[in-house]
Image (cartoon, rainbow, N blue to C red; front, side, top):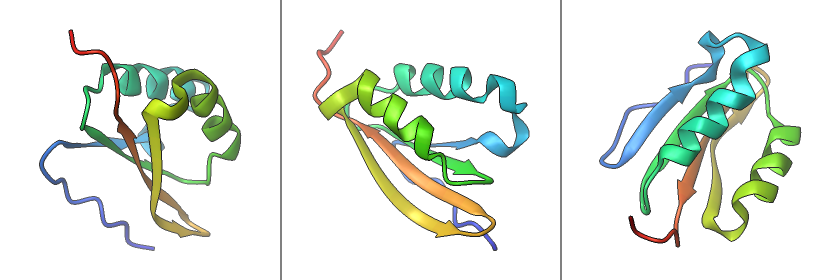
Length: 88
């Protein structure tokens, strides 16, 4: 499967496939925490991270949007968006 990960304005690609599994969740939480309102993290992974999605929903609640761009046996591409945060 070939992933479509071409960046767009305000879209930051995060390819988790190159990160050791034991560090992935921490790295993902950190990357999402760094996003500003209206920005998107295009997440590429070798599997569908269902447990992670539940953890992200618990932490970010309604401020997190999840949009599957691609989904297949070889992995997924998911756009995570952040909205409604207080401006710094």
